[in-house]
Image (cartoon, rainbow, N blue to C red; front, side):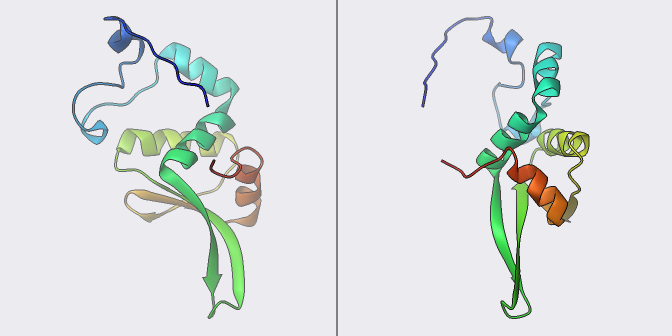
Length: 122
């Protein structure tokens, strides 16, 4: 783990998504410089989002006779959920909304695609 500390009155201009109040009540958008980085490394963004607000589970159906892995991503912020979905689409990951604030990835190929870069939570 690496801890980074920074103090400047310019930080809100560099990271405008950070600010007062709940994040689901304020606009969350990537700045151009952030988008450039995420466009080059979309898997890392999804990895971070899943590690912070998601999970990988084994879904059991038919009384546990059949089991398969799936991912869930839950987020109250519409903007953050949309960022997650945008980058899933860019990586060819199919998803569905299982609840208004929760995204589910259950198709085997899409789960395998996320497995390529998400890895276990540490």
